[in-house]
Each structure stands twice: as C-alpha cells, then as structure tokens.
Length: 284
Image (tube, rainbow, N blue to C red; front, side, top):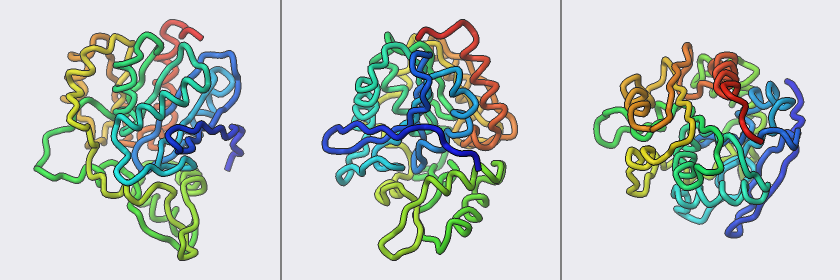
C-alpha cells in the first residue's frame, strides 16, 4: 500500500474539530474533494496521488466522518455541512478553486456552488444529481450507494472482505486502504467504521425541504456530472435532465462503475477529471 504524503489539518467550527488532508503543492490551482455519506477523506487517496504534483489537493472529512468530530444529535443537515465546508475553505484562504463532491458531498457542493459560484472555477458532481430516480416510497437509497453498514469486526481483514463484497468492481488495494483509514476501535475492543452511528439512520439525503432542481438552475459554474454505468443513484435520464437544467453542465458516463466510481474505475475517473480541468487552464 502506497504511503500517504498528505498532512492532517484541522479547523474548529461550532465546537466541532473538522479534519482535512492537505496534499501540498501550495500555489497551484486548488482542488477541494468532498466525500459521500459514511465515507472519509482517504477515499480520494488514489486520485490525490495522481495529481498532487499538478494541483493543490485538499480532501475534507465532513462532520461525523473520518477524523472529524461528530455533530450533536441530528446536526447533519445540509446547512450545517455547508457551513463546515465554508469554514475549511475560508481558513485555507482559497480564492479560486475547483470543488468536487461525491454523493452527500455533491449535494453539499451544489448548495455551496449556488452561494459562492463567483469563487468556484469548476464544479464536479460525482454520481449525484439534484434528484433521485423514481422509486417506491421509503426506498433505502443508502443500500444502493455502496456504503458500509454500521457493524463490528474482529479484524481489518474481516472488514476488508465485507467491504470487497459491497464494492465488487473496486481494485483490492483500494478497498484495503479504505478500511485502513476508515476504521476505529469500538468500546468492545473490536473494529468498526469511523462514522457517527447516527448517520446509519440516513436512508436518503435530508434535503431540508430545499428544491435542488431550482437551486442548480442558478449555478453558472462550469460543471461536470459524472455518473457510473452501473449506478442506481444517477440514471441516464436524470443526467440528461441535469444537463438541460444547469446553465453550463456537461455529463459523462464512466463505464464499469457504480456509485463509487472513483474506486470502481479509478483510471477512467482520473482521465475524466483531467479532460475537464485541462479544457482551459483553471485559475489559481
């Protein structure tokens, strides 16, 4: 497993210690990466290693995830997550940057881009759109999004086997790395995931009554929506609607990939990112 050359940095907001990884190369165009529900900043490690000598990469741990502190009961609304992201970006003094959000992180990024599009050079939405496909009431979208359920394991090897069974398309070494950085010791002495157990009750994103289809209409930022060919979160129809609704949105299907397309097909994800970022030099 390749070493992680990023440094851990922290910002405190609302008495919550927010962690993020800084991969160095300050002075180059910043790329801010925001993970999905029940994941963590290290899920971006493969991509970050590929581009750390070209961009200034920052990967955040959202509250309740990874090495960030947990929110008070129920304090995981989009508005709180938005303010957390804003606190990190302001603390780092970023003025012009690319924002990349996966799943829950993509929802937060849409809200953020709606309010701060004057700062964002590019926006990348990774297998997430303003709405979900038609489904029966109370459909548990967390079960189709390749995220681990809260449970305990006797060892990291056992957890790796479990996660590999969920992420069937992902390279083994990326599953192993996700387990290595995504687990903590439970009170029982066994191993469990680092996310707040309260997040396991989130069956689908809590949009707080916000109309995200109306919200994305007002985002002029150059946007790339990537969706996995095997995804059940973003369909081709949903992707086309995003392209028709957002003023400056292009879509790209990533083949042989589900919801976690950056781990299912990391080469295709990185190539897609590079094409998008190279299409006109992003501002620093």
